[in-house]
Image (cartoon, rainbow, N blue to C red; front, top):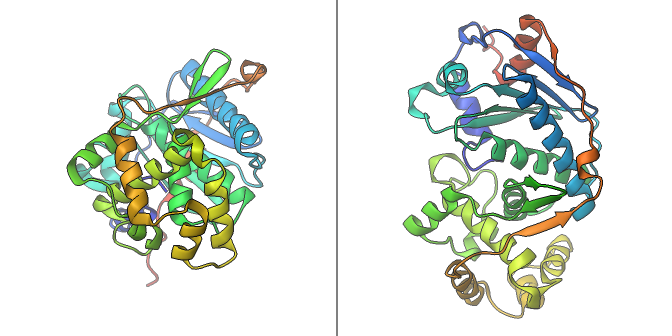
Length: 311
């Protein structure tokens, strides 16, 4: 789930919004692949680039993490062409109090649905990449710790394409602000948080997401001397070993002592990013967007809205 918006926050906000109050505008197109359906009122070349990069990301994560990239149910994404078209939807859902949002998402049954703005300088695409990572993880493995799911999703949310390579692991600017303002969350607390915890939901979730991201980032790319220890730790947790015993066995230290390593890592002049080269990365072909009736877009958007309360 994205740091910017939890499912609980989304649904609570939507409860006050009747479905007929939402105007999605005109001039929509549809792009559909086996794994994603994109409704867009952006320019065709923008829409096609978004769909292409989503398919590239799915393929890259399949190679890098061994994730199952084929989904039983396609992810549905709504792309709005900048602030003028996105603001009415965002304001209808959240009111005027969330002007910083560049995207949001929810889940309906086994379907992921996401909304993003383009050409606004926001990070709506990062939210979509975050959620796609979640969907691929859930499609491959169950029961992973919440901090790992969110840390990995944030790690890959900065996915970018450069020529025949993909780059991941850049630090999200919002995390810099969080770490400067509140510092890191104690790892022992990070490991104890679940989806019901107040630190996971709402406006105060930043430290949990930033610390989870940093912990995963450090173990994936910043600490070659600890190669394999993350996998060992996850295996011990899956075997129901107590958290402290599993941590000591895997890392040879305590969470409190490990926290010092993370602080040292934060203070490095520049954190490492990772580049993967795939010869066939640019060979991905997606269909051109085709015009679609407004009514279809509205119907597709309906699962994001709550059902009226029973009378």
